[in-house]
Image (cartoon, rainbow, N blue to C red):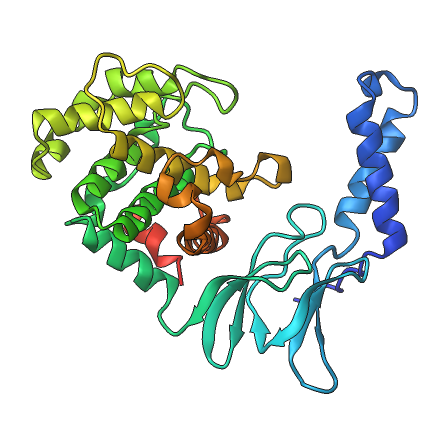
Length: 330
């Protein structure tokens, strides 16, 4: 089979044309009534698929180190690294963090021109970090927490499907390990497993937390028994699930720390939104340990770790086993 001819690289002029069309589609509420709508759609489709929009690696001729530019030629990562694993698209997430290697170690770096290291370079893989955190909170068998389509009110692939729930579960474990709270970490992890299962759609659904706490809990009775949740602990998980999206605890006893770990773990996965306005604002985190300006190292480490998990798993299939999901993290 003949090899496909590579697409021409998008240029600054092509990017400007694409952005003008995007603004037109977003700003005109009657766009579909225009006489030239077919021509506009055709132009938009051609721009999206006729060009290579990926960011470009470049090499510093003096140091031999590699950096990255976007397709407009703007430097988004300074030349300090040996290799990159990610080349994001200008059309989707051009400034999402990028996995990089330097001196045989792996790390996560910002792609916003700052050169900021989000996840420190280390020889230990991100997967090992996640596995350690899961062991810390006492997860005995990954298959206990497999997420299947039939568990979800809305089983469509989207921003609240199994991939999001798995990442919030992982974030709960990472947070709990840093707080040295293994049991509360396990309870938050159980809440993360449950928290969006009762969503009826991916839009505004403020009752999905209470709905999950009330209608999904008894489906997993054997799981809660396996992990020896006491009646009080069951209340703590159910109230955390209910409160993560509403002001209602539905009569369940509240453990503030369990509630806060779940809330903040859910917030850290906002890195999945391409719209920067929808991404994490750490002022809205609930844990005082993460809001404190004096403890920014813990917060930045968690931002780096959770964004690394997202980078590894953003394109995996929905509703795979938890073990297979973890295998994608490197």
